[in-house]
Image (tube, rainbow, N blue to C red; front, top):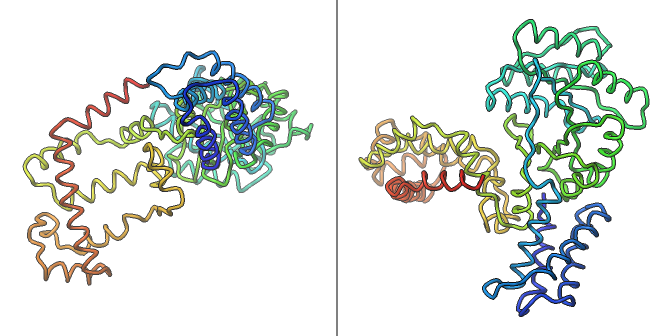
Length: 443
């Protein structure tokens, strides 16, 4: 999302490279480039100007340590100010009430229905709550069907009233249904609407006044850039929502909305969403986003995602097999499955500091493991359990059976041995536990 902005900010910091100290002259040139980079990224002009003015004051008033170069000091100041501009810290969702009611609003096509499903899945799995999805978009029959499909996919009940054209009554009746059936969280999906459509805006306000939600979220398509910020401001003036959700962050977007929206609307960005998968939703962490904008990666989020899919019993079993040199291709397949559950491969790699930029123009398909799985699938059960059995003739047979070549099989065998050695050394040194402990401290 922020690739172009990251490149331009890196170039602006190079102006200070080799300088002995920060001065008003060299910082002015750097900030001019930073402001230009932000505006090119579709950041609101007033926000960009205020941001660079603040950075300038802090940079000129900073006592630069001898051990820290001016370029590094400027990067630190910009990083901290970016995080502050986007909200400073993550803001939790409000789930008070019996039931807690979350009202979803936004423009048509912004991704409200898909987000409603993702939010329901997150609240169900991470908070352990019972969730009811409410199909409140009576103008688009496809939205009701879509919500039903999503509900079935994530194991969440969907409340509908076939034939009803009154979204206020539907939402009110859904809450009564939730109370009767001991459901403690209700998510109301509503129709898309324009801020200039008075009838539709009165309708969403009536829904809010009736259900009295503990949380009203405005869903906006990040691909609309600065228009997203303007739309959020207009909706907030009428609806006074509690937080913003940015969707479609995997699309062709320059990221300006994420940087501007908090400052312009004075409401926190609570969630970011990308893709169609139900787990492609994240709590918005301003500090981590600032790190990613500046090409520093996001190791904490990477470790947290690993923890979510971490099977402790399976890990204990694998650890024992590694100690005894019994780690085989069945275990290798299990490890691949764990990694695939964590999400899009390119996104995962971009969280590693320094790796994202190197892979920017590299196409990493989610089918990256397909060949590996095909090769292992062509092995006999005995070969998977005992890799030492796989001699030259067996490798040729496996290559033919998997539709690959002998060099492909040889390469996998080598990678398997390297992985086995590396994993054994990490497990032996307690590396994983150390990494998780480090991540916990940074939260």
